[in-house]
Length: 351
Ligand SMILES: Nc1ncnc2c1ncn2[C@@H]1O[C@H](COP(=O)(O)OP(=O)(O)OP(=O)(O)O)[C@@H](O)[C@H]1O
Image (cartoon, rainbow, N blue to C red; front, side, top):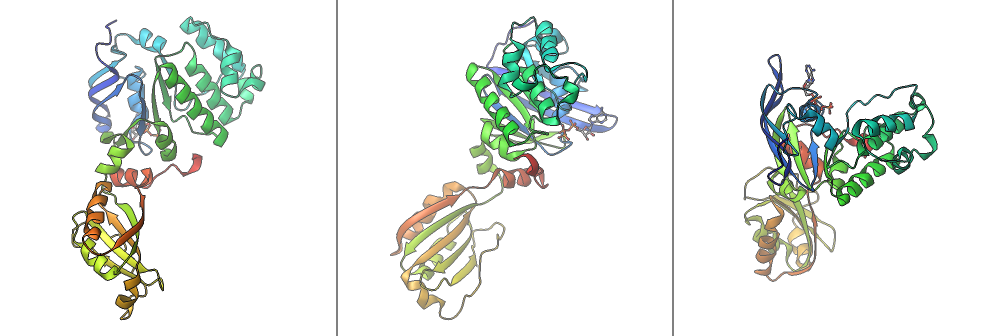
């Protein structure tokens, strides 16, 4: 067993898994550092489970390198399994064994000294400790799998689609346990297509699409790099038409619309700074609009990045406008995901 000589808990380099001529995972290189909660996000079939299977040596790579806790799972599989806790995708129970039996099995295998009851209590199964797991609902089975993953205080907790089959209480349990384990010092790696949960739990996110890592970073970094716009709204006093002219040429402003405070008239205008139109409102623009816009109102801009806010404010300050209030709405993780994968988010059911 080699020692872990850097801060990484998981490191892959050029990891590839082919089934026939189809690549489930292709040239995947990523690192998860000690103490992180890392979200592995991707649509169905992206290659998340295949990657996790290779980390655990359930499947062998076609090409590439893996280091997990400083070990190669192909050489040190027993140690890897000893030090890692995993909630696998598609976990199935021993129908005629109790929850306690399931825990005992893992505790014995890992030579750990956990109390099965305490672990089952922690995941909300206190009342079902001595019931056969065959009688458990899907959500209860998922909770049982989580309890089994916690045996032996693993240094790394891998949760593969942990939210599947869970009601909102179960989802909450997963989140709370992930945070508690992380506070204890464990690194947490979880795969999911449930976007809202990834956003709530993870320090860093990797987006996998068709076996390739298409984006990686903190949520803020992903927002900044995704081709999605930030909505920046300003409530202003002064001549709105003048404001519109001042802002439309600011670099990074994709579009702008202004609406008058006096009659709600909205005048939309695609900016000249390039980029896609995002549907600036244009309803009701008429000949009297300019006069009505003298008293002020609301300016709504869509920006290529949140960093362009200052330039918009500066452009307005060069006119005689008074800015009363600003609000910003950053792109949702759904829009980032769609921008990177070209698909529709699939995470609606368990948020
Ligand atoms: N044993 C196998 N034989 C052939 N193809 C496979 C095998 N395992 C996975 N694949 C294929 O590899 C691709 C990636 O599958 P994988 O299960 O890793 O995706 P995933 O991101 O975990 O998806 P999901 O969210 O649906 O679990 C899919 O196209 C899948 O059909």
